[in-house]
Image (tube, rainbow, N blue to C red; front, side):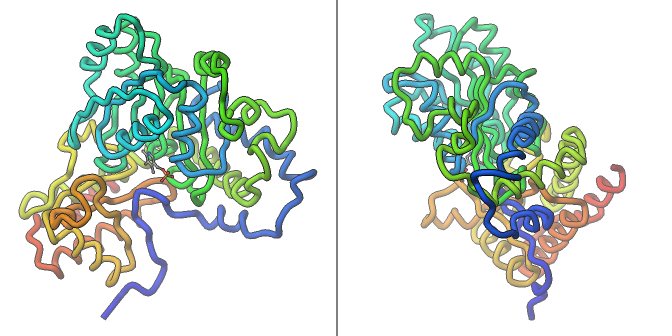
Length: 398
Ligand SMILES: *Cc1c(COP(=O)(O)O)cnc(C)c1O
């Protein structure tokens, strides 16, 4: 029999669960884009978007997914032939590097593997070696969603400063914004990209490029920027349509308004603390399961793990079997492994990920863990005992 009928839970690392309050705001008749509420709400929306990223600088909105934000960010500050340094800690660093290559940018890729973070000392060495300052930007993935590694952005900033190198620091916070602590201004980040569908709890379709003053100067030096990706009119529009380079993403704007209201009512510090505590509960369960049998967390050191996503190894075919079981029998959808093995390789079935970003609370996490526990039992996958107790202990101590 199946026990999945009831409210389904999408526990993949994006898109994330959309709150009812966001859905309700989006469920409305098409609004006028020439006058009224939509136009009036923009200044406060922009301010609240900046508060989430802890910045007083600039933000441009695009109707796109994260891949569009990647391209938008690069196009504004880099020219074909410019060089960038891309430290990769999983699939997403490679992805952003590929977008750069497609724009004719020369990529120096430094791969730190799939289980360890970027080494700031190595970045300092590479930047010191670039005495001619040919490297124009360092492109770092804050949380790599494929490996669940969280990189230490202040340490990378410090390494760049120690090397006395003027490259821009560009950060991909698509998986981390409003989940893991991120302080754009205090951390000296020049450009940051984010999307609507992860920590921001809105359906996919909006992307955000935040930029500081040094990045604005780099943009001013560019001779040609594609009109659609140009962040100048979007960040400082004379007319409403310029925020979006055309027709506004009407319903997404109302959804985003509701999501930002939720985030700021809770308080961004409390949002970060909630993600941290729920992540610790998930790790406590996973560490317990890992005491016996094939399950292992991809990142051994807790201090290097994202609070928004957890990547796990469990050996083929258990990963796929477990995902199928919890979906079919318990109504919980877990994430596939990403970038760990090629699709088609039998090893691909040995990985999965848990998304715990955005609209997620203690009972959702406990329910998801309970479903995984039942799956381990049903599928006869050896595992340590007491995982749910361990998770409860973390939640009880909150
Ligand atoms: C999801 C994600 C992306 C890609 O976003 P899309 O909306 O799928 O284009 C890029 N980087 C990171 C870190 C992500 O988590």
